[in-house]
Image (cartoon, rainbow, N blue to C red; front, side, top):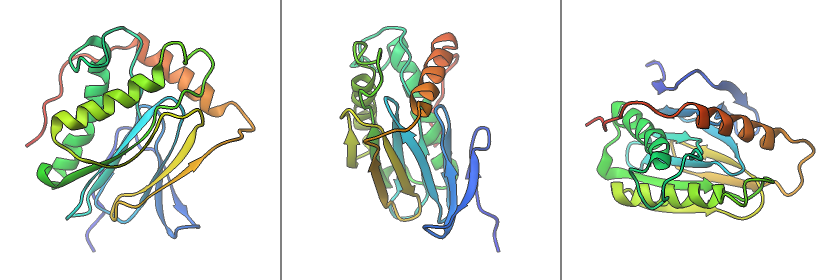
Length: 204
């Protein structure tokens, strides 16, 4: 039996999901995961966004989880210093999908997150900027968005079945700890300190 083909920057938390009966990968801020296998990719989003992209014919799918930094630039400018980080996060996901055999013309996307859920983030419109960016990027790439759940004021947990394209979204109306807020604040500080250097070209 062929080994599963996956692409990932450091290896995320891989576990067996008893509820769905498949292998699962937990995607944290700044991570992505791509697979040809029948598995579920799971993430929890506050102000960050995730793009779930899949070749609808071959069943090769992947998910990222990212946030734009606060270094300025109009969200409508895809080459602004702020948007450059988002471009990197999106292109690295697309590159890995194409390397595993996905065809650009057959890609479709489902996008989630961008909620204004954290004190201090609302004024900067972080969630709005992230949501606007991911929609603009996919439009420019000619990748249709076939489902989305963006903005709002609540975090959400997303399950993406990369083989079939099925997505389950659970709104988190009550939280018993500050894990999401702390994780996104730490991630935000990290990306503001470490701007992306160099460019990523799409793999053909």
